[in-house]
Length: 113
Image (cartoon, rainbow, N blue to C red; front, top):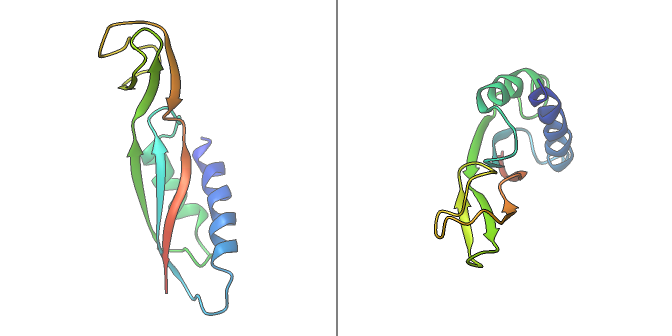
């Protein structure tokens, strides 16, 4: 379950960002997760609760913003959204696609008090 190690990395970033003495608690963290990031969201939520114990983010809400898979079609030269990496172009049916996005995993922002 690599979601546990993902949450450990997120915890390090959150703790560093919330290290200021005027920040007592992190109440929400929003992540952007691409369709092809290989993240199991239920496992990420479970790992979140476990990994954040004892940190300023303990009890914080984890909000996940889904990002679509995107690719550049060399047949029609359009950037298109795709459901799966090996899908054909939804516009022209072409099969020459170069992935352009969908593998992201980033902290978008966080709320603190």
